[in-house]
Length: 496
Image (tube, rainbow, N blue to C red; front, side, top):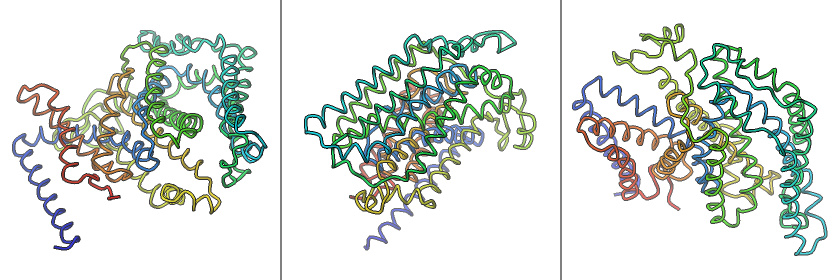
């Protein structure tokens, strides 16, 4: 039998097996329980995909095993919750992050001149370390006596207060004259890191030149944003707290996702990039980073579980019979074929499908996707065409972290926001990537839906048959083992 005939036969057998499983589950559970469990599985699957999509881009395309990915999911939840509840902390630290990012952005401006310096081998190794040390000292001076914990406390106070006026719990930002030197010093710190990352004197680091005009424009934009947010910190917090809850939730999603993108870019440039030739060190570094981020979150917000209030669009009592009625009244539940289901979970399902379409279009229909795929398969050729592959990898890593942060803020309104919330989703994300196939975003989506369904029906049968909940948790691992035995490269993976 030819290879194509075998492939067709396996596909037919797979379709028939899936159809038989669906029919059996429907017959056993009944219509109402089956539909409710399927919708719950789609909800979990959407969250799994948002984590797995980032892992697929980072792990599957860049061969970077990011053990801090679950922490990015957790940070997205915390940043979104903080912004929606009381954004004082966000506007207090945003100018500092933007200023540091502006300094980091000087890498392509410094690099062409620094790599051509005549330095001995000893100083080629010593100078970057000295720059990192100087950056750490300057950054420490910039953050000296900065009350970041006091800013973080504003959301915790607002989360438990019974005050009808959220502005009553808004703590004042640091006075402008005392604060304005902090972004300036952090920009200097970022510039020192840029010098270190450029690896002065190392001519092997000479790469294709980047468009200077675009970099300068982006740098100017970051500097302007730093100045603007420095000036409007307190007024911006008040404006956000007084706006419509649905709009505030939308801004929380954008803020958490943008934070993830910015954080991912900074981590790739400062921590991942110097270690590409030492992949095992990347594993250790990202694993350590996950512990650092978890401890940092506990310092800022205490090791407590918070519940993010759902926006008005998903919080009004009552059940809607149609999507139009839900959008008009903001009902908390909706009737789907006679089954009552929370509207917010329906939103999470839609979010997962929209992000799948976005990633598919980005990777297959855009010039950026073409550059990403080409840069992964043949980086030397892409460099020869005048494209800076390192910048492409930075973008890929940042996009992957942004998707994880988006999943975190998407989960925050119905999952407890707590330091350990990302651990389980990171594990499910890795399992999803393995099942779907390395580097396949379609496989990540299909694998996420399969795992979501397995977990939902596992919970259903565990409850119905009074079994241990660990049975449902083990179901995802069992599926991974079966897939690896039958198809080691994953459902949509390609053989090496």
